[in-house]
Amino acid sequence: MDLLEAIILGLIQGLTEFLPVSSSGHLELAKFIMGDSALPEESLTYTVVLHFATALSTLLIFRKEVIQVFRGLFQGKINQEFMFSLKIMISMLPAVCVGLVFEEVLASFFGGKILLVGLMLLITSVLLLLADRSKTTSKDVSMFGALVIGLSQAIAMLPGISRSGATISTSVLLGVDRNKAAKFSFLMVVPLILGKIAKDILGGDIHFSSEEIIPMGAGFIAAFIAGLMACQWMIALVKKSRLIYFSVYCSVVGLVAVGFTIFT
Image 1 (cartoon, rainbow, N blue to C red):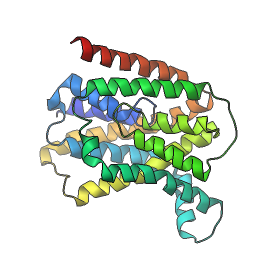
Image 2: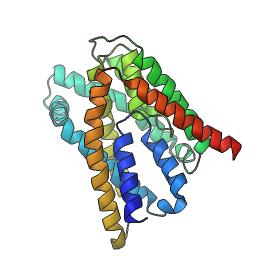
Image 3: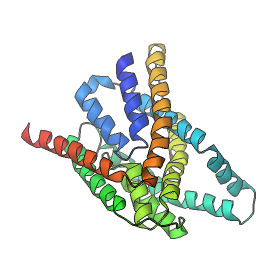
């Protein structure tokens, strides 16, 4: 993996982690276009580095909300902060269970499954269209809502299903305020990313040589900066009900991916 490939993949991860177009799906498409050599044996390590970069950008933007979550967990009082923290924990359960039980099955969906990516992008497009047309309300995320949103996050482990798109769309369809839906969507994934990183490190799956430090560092910086911009942009777009643009985009990319697979 050369420096340019590392930066391109970093930008893709940083932008698509927050924009509702599926980061995993776009990384699969990018690797397919650039060839399997784009991410050879260090694929897992580089993926972890990119996810860590986007997790840090989320922590920076939502630092006040993150502090609120930790206060709620450790202050020992049943108040608004504790309830918000509890909702975050509940939303994580489906993805944790699916990830632990079906880890090998999920892994089989990656690695050049372009038809699957295309079909899942079309599903993402429909979800975004439904959310874009839903009514604006001022409701907060409920306990039951947190579980349902968590289920949508678990489904979004498939490449091509946008995690942010699925969780934000589910929240909006449940009647949650759009701004609260976006913040909850971005916050609920941070513990999962950090937990996955810790699991891979402790499992001994992370390894790289000294010559890979510069490309990985460049990719990390690209993903971090792109993530900062995309996260703030996405919040503004959700407030203004502009999800239709991403719905159209996912439709086009999905149809191209499906068409390419069928006719080549």
